[in-house]
Image 1 (cartoon, helix red, strand yellow):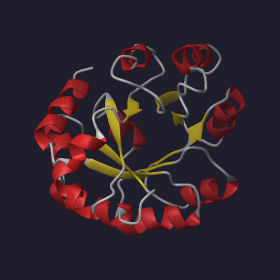
Image 2 (tube, rainbow, N blue to C red):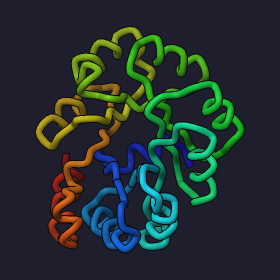
Image 3 (cartoon, rainbow, N blue to C red):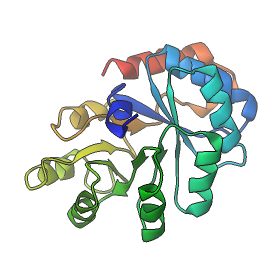
Length: 205
């Protein structure tokens, strides 16, 4: 399994925050049935790692990975949970060392040309661009493509249904990360059908 195959499975990677473990399975099914094939579960809640396991069982044909992988603890928690891939908002030497000794696909984050060049020199040709909107958005990625055309991105952070096409039209963007199909009120009210509809809309971008 490669990070390229995962990122090209659908145009949008939903960035999921699981507060209640009971929501993991129905949410995963709603997103998958709506056409989203790679699901990123952020390790920001106490139940996140366990949610990954439940989601993998619920949608075995999906790629269920972890986000907010920022240190050895979250890296190891991802491995223990059986994550199909890992995403970091940025990188440090510890994370790069861990990733170099692990077969699980790793998507490191970058926000500047220097960070992109550094990661490219270490063999990473697919990166997360974060925080996308705050770091210059689609115009920034368009500019980066000039000198660094061989690096591809999954921009995440502040992207909406309306702005996603601006990113997806760029030659160096393979998908976008987003949360707009994960309305907290819908999740609280168990509105899985509505979430599936939003996922389907995103999958057709």
